[in-house]
Length: 334
Image 1: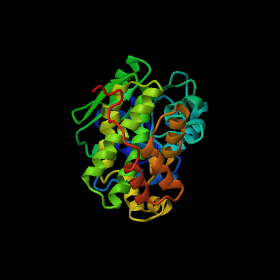
Image 2: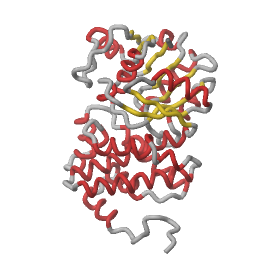
Image 3: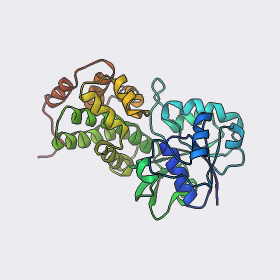
Image 4: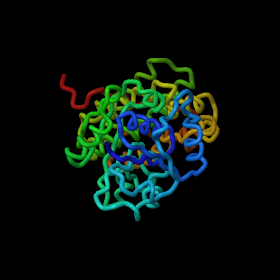
């Protein structure tokens, strides 16, 4: 049995807390919001996970020292926009060698750093790993079958985390490609916004399939240019996560995109979704990375124009369709 603190009381953190509790571990949930901790501890429910009852064995705290002291694993499950601030807040309490598992997805605007890189900036004494893949909290919290990937710097760390999470409903693979796993998880949210916009415009399955396949091509081009393994982007944390995020109504990124496609502003769409839309925070950073590495990412580029510069969504799609003619596969031999 491991002692685990889940940092963050959102739906994903709570889903993983339920899973870890079911696996026999001692689980506590920390949140900086005392009202959230009070709600969870008193009701044993989360308002965004209707019908799910939290095990009474899970404990809750808003005290930083209680959350960090004597824990085998800290699971960083705060929204990506709060990762750096949370890491900085807890850093003085974190012992050398502490294992921290980031489970959120995003790239920081400005620095263009992934979440694990942000954690390492603020807590250099920690051993940081990442968990990612096609895994909606609504399904994991109900213990529905899910497969996911843990990436770490050493095989021993990856296998330790694999053993903590693995069970009959949660299959965990290991990887050494931390950056590739994180890029796939972050940038698929941007493509999912585009897929939602297409849905909101009334386009069909053909458009969705095109966005998914050309979207993963963009992500893989950028990732491999940055030194990631190409195979990562055609696995669970690449195409797998992209498919589920573009196709499911559980996806807050797709739902936000649908509302924008229907004519609502970004601010109106985010408010209606009611949760953090991670792709909005990764879109500018993804485009900046592409420019830095000289990689063409037309879907990500047009999504940025629609989100932040008021470009008409229908016009953006037309421009994607009317780009210069190309071969699908580079270095084609006739």
